[in-house]
Length: 292
Image (cartoon, rainbow, N blue to C red; front, side):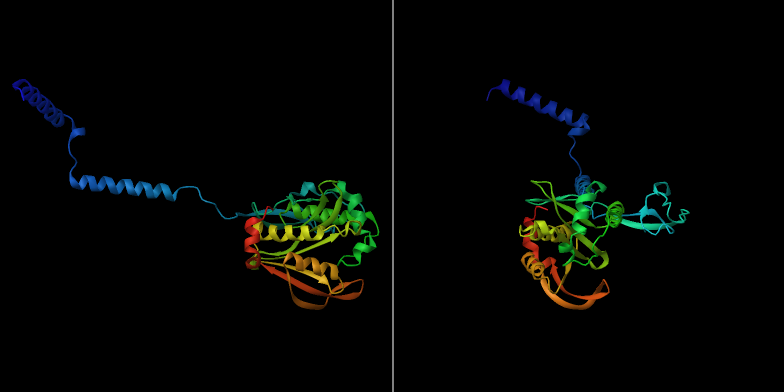
């Protein structure tokens, strides 16, 4: 190596040492400083992880509603101004405060299956809904009384709409998506959140029997209840002589559990029913593939 190269390398080393002494960025960190820095970085990372957004559980919202104790309809209103006095009754708008609990994000108002649309009823559906509730064939296997006039059907629709309003599970209107015709009325009722249990039921119009609508509707109800209401158990009751509905429940996956003897009074007659039940553990794989 030449003297020139040695001289040049010596100058470079001298410059590096000079920069290191003058600039604190080039100073080597003491051991305790390195350890402290590492711990701070780890702590920051943990704090960041803990603040990442997570899927929060359903939020239960408590709201005030109002019901008129004199109108007799037992409807619940968001505010007293919504109340329409009934001229046929002594309606003084004497309101009681009602506290309702709505589980945010847990009630779906529209559900679709391959062939069916499950949606909220409106007063525009009065004619078609009245045909279902005034059909003796439909009443024969049901637990409701035949509607002899449209006023009875109006009361029923108003009650359903009110339950939608307060966030309570209620029956849907069930339409054939191709024809837009109402073929059934069905859904959930009797929700017991504390025990994660609910009851389902439906009425398929006799003019639409034999098309498999009940199986498709019942399956959607079970999957909806398990997925969106987070229930552990779905019940159904059926008249003991209603063999067709019993077969439908078995196809959906429900099992017979109890003979409810004379448990329902209708037209001064005590009716007996069979109770069918399905549990979450029975359809875990089905729920994973569910499109509801």
